[in-house]
Length: 161
Image (cartoon, rainbow, N blue to C red; front, side, top):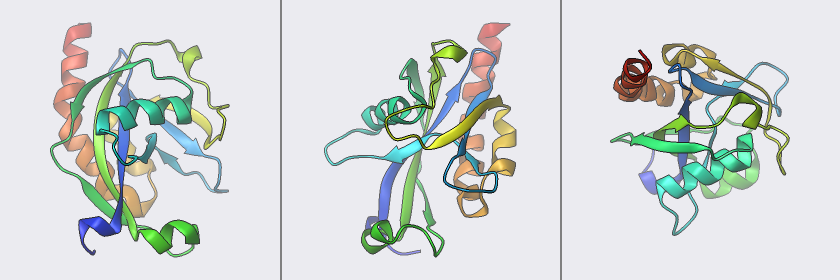
């Protein structure tokens, strides 16, 4: 890996429902199953918090969420060869800041038919299950997010009980 400036700054959102499960969505630009957390770039002059809420709206059609925690560290990954050339010219990969959010809406508030749809399906899963669904090059990001947000998930479950 190169310097952090070689990586596009992004936020990845672990959106928790009231039961402490996390939303994952299936990418629509791949033929094989490719699940991930909603994630997207942090624009110049934008905070991680602003980017997280904007990206939720852009990718899953809702920003009905409250930020609970932002991970202490960022995790970088390199894009595999074959990724869009335009992005690879400017960055070699992405530098992800995981963000935990509490979803305040209802399932019907999630709408993947956005202006630029990125996903074809979504579901709620256990936090610990997300690394097993993810494409291999993103796995370190998701393993870190699980470790960082287990206490958040446990607090949600405790408040529900």
